[in-house]
Image (cartoon, rainbow, N blue to C red; front, side, top):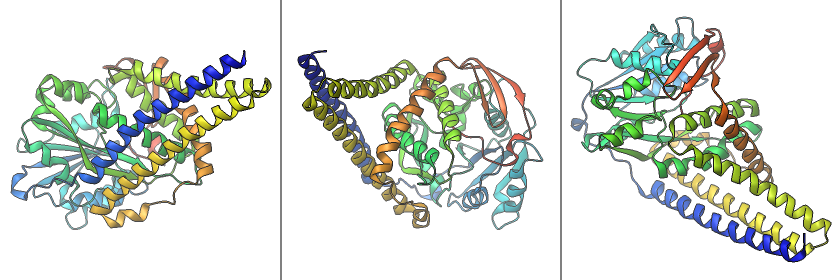
Length: 424
C-alpha cells in the first residue's frame, strides 16, 4: 500500500468521521432540546375517562414493592391496576398482595395467568388476559414494567395526549443507569443512550411506559397481534398508521431504570432487543448495515493504524488516531448533553428519583466501554439476523415469523430469583 493511498484513505476516513459526527450531533441536540423545552402536559382531572394500568409479572424485581406503591398513589381520578402474575407460587404474587393491604391498595386487582397461550410470549398472554377482563367502562389502557418507578403524575402525563382523537397511542422511554462496578450495566447504559434518539426519530415505542385507547386495541387488530406475537409495543406503529392515528412520544416520561446487571445478562438482553427489531421493525436491513458498518470502520481504523506504523508513515497514523479520538470526544460530549437533559426532566417531576443518579463514568472507562459496547451490539445484531428461537425468563420460544410463535418449553421455576417479563 503506497503513501498516497494510505493518505487518501486516511483523508476519506476523516471526512466520513466528520460527516457521521455532524449528523449524529444534529439529531442528538434536537432530542436534547425536546427534553429540556417540552413541559409535561397534564389535563384537569375531569378530562380523564376511566383507565386501567396493566402490569404482567414473572418474578419480583428488587424494587417491585415501590413500583406498586407508586402506582396506587397516582393522581389520576379513576383508574385500577391489573396485575397478572405468572403463577401462584411466583414471588411477585406475595409482594403484590402485601401492597394491596395498604391504603389505596384496593386499586390493585391481582390475578394469576390462567390461559398460557402457546402462540405468543407469556407477557402478551398476560396482557391479552388482562384486557379481556376489563370492564366496558374502561377507556384508556396503559402498560408498565415491574422495575419502573412512576412519579405521581405519570399516568395523567401518559394519557393526556390520548384525549386528542388524532392520537392513537403514547409512550415514554427508559434510561438505564450505569454502575461503575458492572461492565454489563455500563454497556447497557451506552447502548440505550445511543438507541433512544433513533427510537424517537422512527417512532419506536417502549412498552414499559405505553398507553392506547381500548377501542384502538380492538379496532386496529393490535390485541389480536398480541395473541400471536412476542412483544406488545413493536407492532403498534404500523397498525396505528393504517388507521391514520399518531403515535406520540412523551418527553417528560424518561424513566430511570436503576438495576445493575452483568455482562452476560446484558449480552442476552441486547440479543433479544435486536431480535425484536428484526421481527417487527420494517427496516432491520438498515439496522444490520449499521452494525456491519460499525464493525467495518473499527477494523478499518485498526488496519490503517497498523499499516501506517509498519510502513513508517507516522503522520498518517497520527491523522487517523486524531480523527478517531475527535469522533469519540464528540460522542462523549453528546452523551453528557443527553444525560443532563434526562436528569433535568426527572428533577422537574420527582426530586426523590434523583437520588438514583450515579457518578458519571470517567473518561478512561468510556474509552474502553464504547468499543466494548460496539462489539456486543454487533454480535447481538448478527445473532438476531439468523436466530429462530429465543429463551426468555426460562421460557423457550420458536419463531417462524413475527406472528408465528410457538412456546416450546416453560420452566416455572425460572423466575424464582429475579426479574420481570421485560419489554422492548
